[in-house]
Image 1 (cartoon, rainbow, N blue to C red):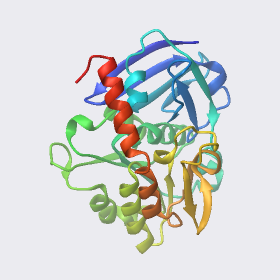
Image 2 (cartoon, rainbow, N blue to C red):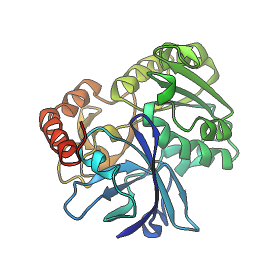
Image 3 (cartoon, rainbow, N blue to C red):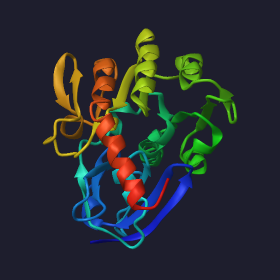
Image 4 (cartoon, rainbow, N blue to C red):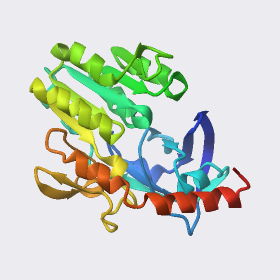
Length: 279
């Protein structure tokens, strides 16, 4: 069992959890993820590392309640059964910062995608990079950790669908307007957002990295749920990624795969909420 230091709601459907798990983050790098299991019989939940204090052994993750497993996770107060990591591969730029020293970099985040974006931008700032962030969500209340993002980025551009904060519209509008200022783009968020970002950057020949973590289920490569098509070849997001060349991803196939277990997930969630006495 692992001690929970914090598990609090930070937006209408998102939570921040801090856990004492030194083994899981001892050698972790930005872009990697961990697997959490709330209880001994719980499902495995892969979550990208949001922040970590490697000296104190404290892991921080941000997760969105979107189904039964994350609903259960939000109820835990004192201990969590398992924390395994680090898993997956580190972000390419963070792993080899010397190779990108002369590059102008922008990160595009959608919704909770800011959670994996933040540690990468933080790490690059420590290495002397000035990185911009374009961050979008449906509305102001769904924009997370704004103060943290602004503390590590040179500039943060905001976009909301309803215009309640920043510019009204999509991140791609800002990206296309500012595209001449960048050599590399990293996009993390909903698959449809990453698809649209990659379509913009491809027009201008901008190297683009995307994270296929939305596809991951058990995080070990055993379930096959995170199989995606990269350059026409099958890859697994959890072991080959989670990050790939954004111009080589078959996004349409990925979006279809995300809906495979939709009905089963909905049924399990309804059962979970009923057992917890929630509507």
